[in-house]
Length: 226
Image (cartoon, rainbow, N blue to C red; front, side):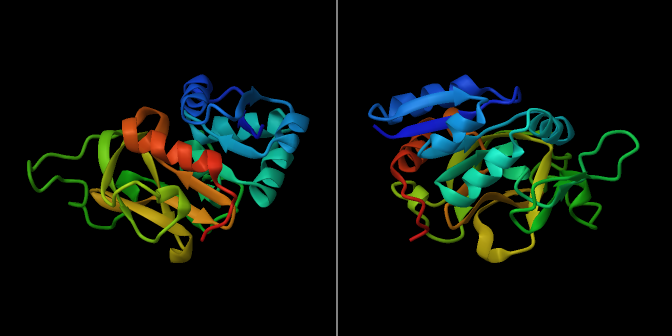
């Protein structure tokens, strides 16, 4: 029986992710663990997360799980969700008082920016349909435009809608790492992938059929991007 470990360092609604995985992958053993040895022994690893990126990266390092997460991201099928996407980039401007930005894991090229800081156009965050400002956080259902094929998109139509909750968004600097884009006043990377890593800004566990299909695809994914 293959195993899927949801990394637990105290940040995020881990059990909803685990329950969704158990539902779509009944033949897999789904674990929620903060044990580096369990993560290392797992066949697949999921890195979820909610909250602020500063607290997130601090918790990851305080629990000494950063090496285990990095090793998993280099060596086995790996899925990042929400902050689990953002932390894969180089830095975030969601900072604590007195800090310029937060340095993150740097596996992908790009930065995480607040929606209002992405564009120099002062009208970028005004919804042309209503004339009102887009609400921050970006919360609710939105479409994802698939920018290239990937095994985790199998059975999911282009422009499918997924559930988002976030105020900061990824601005990728490497188009080859982008697998999905979403528009909310500005375009942002809502899905990214390279080699054995796939990560999404939205919450597949809250995204009904298409979100569960993505998790099902991950549960059988061999880590190939073909």
